Length: 226
Ligand SMILES: [Ca+2]
Ligand SMILES: [Ca+2]
Ligand SMILES: [Ca+2]
Image (spheres, protein in one colour):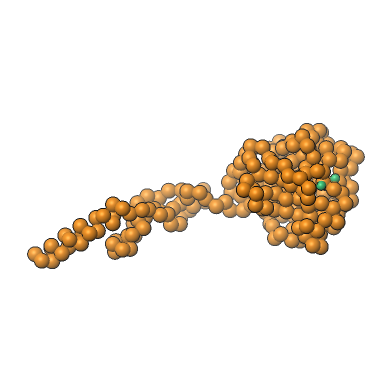
């Protein structure tokens, strides 16, 4: 009888703990689509000496994307068969994450000026091309699914052929990718060697970013959207 009373007393003590219990998420397993699923359990289960038990299994609340959105190619020295300087320079981005990215408030900057990108959705595995003028499309053939972003002003103050830097910043202004070339060593020192007119600087693998010049190559045949 005494034991029963003590047990009831302990249960009464435990009840407020259960009712006030907050829940937290703990990584559990992946769905068939590779999505992280989380098990919600009570924070004070261990205090109550209860076996761990999922209250519910649900998708990760604010998942960290796998992979990165990166600058993958820079066509800064425009040759006469592909337009004119500043108007037809372009920068290629690749969404190497496993999620759709809303480009609203992302920024692209050179060593002088910053442009804010418009609200456009870039799918996982999709390329975007940033250029000043819509006329750039007439000089190149790229896959229809490529997202074209026309700034109506130069990229930065124009991408200098002798040397410049380029930065991709997320909506809170953090630099997520950058490079420099030629006489500008703001990002890489020594900087990437400049390329001749008509070539581009291309990322060797659109998903590999070591933040060194080893990620980049002189691309004889620029390939926007690929
Ligand atoms: Ca240029
Ligand atoms: Ca510039
Ligand atoms: Ca490319």
